[in-house]
Length: 561
Image: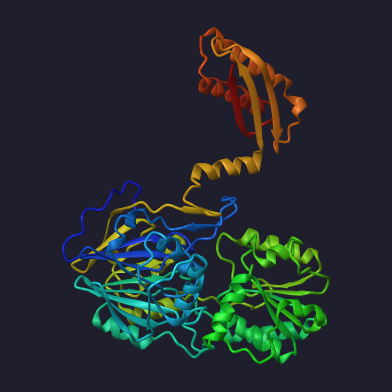
């Protein structure tokens, strides 16, 4: 089994006739999916998604893949294939197209509709090529065939990429729901046909590789929703991903059955459901959906709200409701349904929202106490079945954390993929397919790129460390005036603290330490402001650490006169 090593260097030039696979996101993490394929000097990108920030990334809106390795080669990119319309697969596209707006986007009707609406907000009009399952398109040197897969969003596709180096299949996100609401099955006969042709490298979704058995049916949720609607005496508020059309369809069906009106809350939810309805993916009975303002004239027992925020996102509608920061106020007896799973890393945020809603009197229904969610990713039983059908010569799990990648490799080996042909890579680790064998060839830069408001990439890890310190420990500012020629103190020092838990009046001993340090510096002839700032920082920092066992940020200001 191959695996990355911290000492991996840059990959060598790609051998003639070989295919290079470079994941820039989605390996070792859930989200930010992006893979670059290279053959004959040309590039094909599959997906370009975002990762949502965690608590230790304060102030960050989104996390993008690092485009550094392709930034100078955008003229070599023949297209971006989008497997489906989830944010973790399309959310980064606007930021990539800012660098070169005319890169063609290839995807299904619903996927392209979602990304076009998103790009409109960025004032980008993309070049698009709509494809559907069964289509085969030549994109530069890449012969791409598209295969239907079932997922938690309509119109998801896998892509089979043929080059002289071999046949590579990327599954995108998929599961094997045998009773899908839209009747669109994962096309196992097509995968079997590709397996017979000979899949040289399979890039397989691994998110649920640790989960035994098979994923349940989406339609099973309908019965649980009916029970929730039957028991609810007041308003029902359902939180879901803004792209989970099948889940929202079942909520609409239940609302119609129980004589309730539905309003969508949140810009992305309103936009996406409008697109789904216009394209025929969402069936909405006449008069069922109303504007949120119309709910004021309806009794609570006739109201359903569908909003975003099932992952505890701070600015999403549900989180703001839990914090009493939204026009919709949670009241005693409301029923809130979190119709989604917990994405790893979001648990704390989600339970914070659940506790907030419960505090205001809501009855919260979630995956932990009712079957209101089934996953969109194939579990271990399905993956075993899938690997046996595909019979890949090389296996490289994608779309998962380390434990998921490892579990998928174990499943692959159980179905007969040789250990030496199973590749566990992570973001930035380059894999070359040469003479039918996939091997790690090196590593390229693939770090996090942070979006903070309108700035992209300006916030660094060092900046985030400062933010965490400020949030956890506060800061102490020290102002002192020194004589420019002698370095002697002529004003101050003055100390102010914010968020440190230390009163300004308690800093008398610290002031003495600063004066002592600056006095020694003056005797030694040290008068350079930057050096004096370091002395002040050390003196105050040591005193705070020794006295309070805290480490706030120390901000020294030394002014020469």
